[in-house]
Amino acid sequence: MSDRFRFRSMSSRALAVIPARLGSTRLPRKPLHLIAGRPLIEWVWRRVTAFPLFDCVVIATDSEEIAAHARAMGAVVELTSADHPSGTDRVAEVAARVPYQKYPFIVNIQGDEPFVEEAHLEGALRLVRDEGWDVGTVASKIANHEEWLSPSVVKIARGPDGRALYFSRSAIPHQRDREPGAEDFGSGAFLRHIGVYAYTSDALRRWVKLPEAPLEQLERLEQLRPLGAGFRIGVSLVGAAEAGVDTLDDANRAERRLLAV
Image (tube, rainbow, N blue to C red):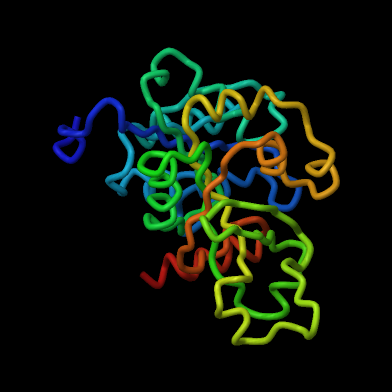
């Protein structure tokens, strides 16, 4: 174990899991798509393992091809079921295995986020590790009117104590008297969800046992399942996130940025 983890207590240890599924409709074979000479999943893994937040980083995949690439680059890999409906279910399968049951905190990191920020992961982890929330996630301020209206941008309504009240693809909160402007978007009342999740091990186990919820089916947002079941989901306000890789255009943009470093 490296020196940076040597004095961390067993009660505060954290596991990072990067789910990676080979099937993708918008960018075929996305985790293995080459960006600046390396597969996308390698960029994500290299970035996450450089952060001094986790005692173990695991790539969880249903693909032996992804697993072979991951092992070749030195990653810890777990092959999981091909039947999982979400990345959360894949993360939960790994966390339930004997080698990982010792970790009280688990962080789910998307496998298509090569520019994920340490501050975002730390913000989500702190909520469950230090503040007692069941689930921790993060949000940034909505940048403009177009982003607020876009159904591809998930919005959060957040309480004064930092609790998530609702997640939606719709433009929330609604401002009754007028359309929001730049000053409103800078206030912190209009928030964009960043898809990073930290869980206590117990909350993760309970989450994946829940049936799909009606609001989840309507919005196609899985976080509405635990929210509707009474989970305490904390939301940390962080800086804006770099867009992930979902299309070929996204991959080309990411490559230009990585080559420019």
